[in-house]
Amino acid sequence: MNAPAAALGLSVRDIAVSFGGIHALRGVTMTAPAGKITAVIGPNGAGKTSLFNTISGFYRPDAGRVILGGTDITSTPVHARAGMGLARTFQNVALFRGLSVLENIKLGGHHLMRAHPLAAMFGAASSRREELALRAEVEDRVIDFLELDNVRHKPVEALSYGLQKRVELARGLAMRPSVLLLDEPVAGMNREETEDMARFILDVQEEWGVTVVLVEHDMGMVMDISHHVAVLNFGELIAQGTPAQVGRDPEVVKAYLGGEAQAVAA
Amino acid sequence: MTDFYVLIEFLLLGLLASGISALMALSFVLVYKGTHVVNFAAGEVMMLGAYLYYTAAVVLKLPPAAALLLALAGIALASAAIEALVLRPLAGQPTIAILMATIGMASLLHGGVEIIWGQDPLETPALLPRFPVNWGEVMIPGAAIGNFVLASLLIAALVVFFRFSRAGIAMRATASDPVTAATLGIDIRASQRMTWVLAGVTGTVAGALIVSSGSVSPALASSALGVFAVVILGGLDSVAGAILASLVVGVLESLTVGYIGGKMRDVFPYLVVLAMLIVRPYGLLGTREIERL
Image (cartoon, rainbow over all chains, first blue to last red; front, top):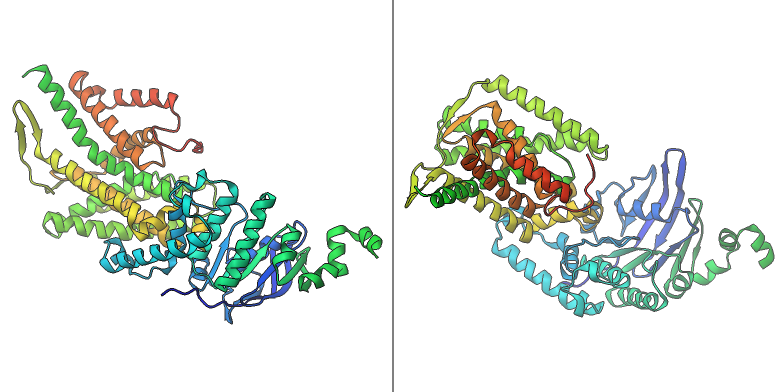
């Protein structure tokens, strides 16, 4: 009934963002191929989060365009981008405290309910059925898929950090996105939690056919699961390609290890 | 009449009066919870709503129920306009700037109402039928019961709306974390506008019930001052707290009138509130980390 939306590619062209005199992004152009995992990496302050916030719509870029599957969404409001297939998670877990795991996940399906607001307000039968269908789908697919079955009625604040991150991923999936943005999905996780999350991200891409774009500091994980890597430094794109290509790039080595290390490496 | 019946009568009167004060408190709490704005114009919006009811009932000669509906539609438009013209441009400004804006808005509404309707009390038709109810030696005015029932129904409807409806859930998500709510596809501007509309409607029902079977005057707005004590006692951001605190203050006021004297009515309950706040500064059910104003 509700197959995931077809994967869409995401690209940004000549994006420039500045805050006062600080240039967070200068003319960044990159593409995340449809149905693949793309990682955005770079040292702290390189502009990764600014890029994510521009793609999400929180920042309006000074110049450049954001293109989702061929549609220019540069000036589309944040909430409307959800309806176009864009979902994201946050660096700091952004779940609604006081709500259960299931309620949080159901909020991910919020934008899919097309009932008229007035009808929904009075609990019209059609919106009720829609709600039930949504709920069934959410339970069957997302919760099973992410192995959240035994915590579905627990309040989110009672869960471990790693599980909370997984609930956030589940909520993103419940939006049935074409493109899923993951902001540091394994930050602060231990080895085991990191491996679990990496496996889930791979499964999301393979089984759900979702285009995944992630920002991450864990180089091992990035190199293991990504098809495509883009490297930012001081607001500029300095390299993009396969993990192997990027790992050999002298500019990237320099950005991460400093000029002297490059001399040592050479 | 025995002492026991006197006690029952004043307890009941206090309980029944708390319905309207809970509505007034909710009109304030909804806005604080939904948009983190401390709305010092809540009393004035309620007053404007009551004048709209008066105008619909007396000037347009509508039957009371239709007059109330028209007043609610009018206040919904006015609330949406306030949100769009006053609050929206100030989004992201310091709390104190927004707070001053609501105080300014209160003055504007007060002045505007006096220009249009004047300062004298205007007689208002009854919204609910008037009949005294006698249980043995206990006598209760029927309007008090009607007001309480109507207030309870509206509060129950609000609770159901926030708990189960799509728009209500969107409003709660927006209140809790607007950034995340937006990424989930929730139109947070629409949610915040809806919050102001619901608060205005709730206040107007309270205002119409207060002036019904009496008269409306600009002094109505200042009766909302007492509600600040209720709101602070319940916790600025707690719907359940507002209801509970309304009951506490309503019963305390009534017992004060009965046993200490009418002059102490506006003093004694607030001494109790003050004493309680020394123990629980965030109110009975409020969130602990509420900011200082």
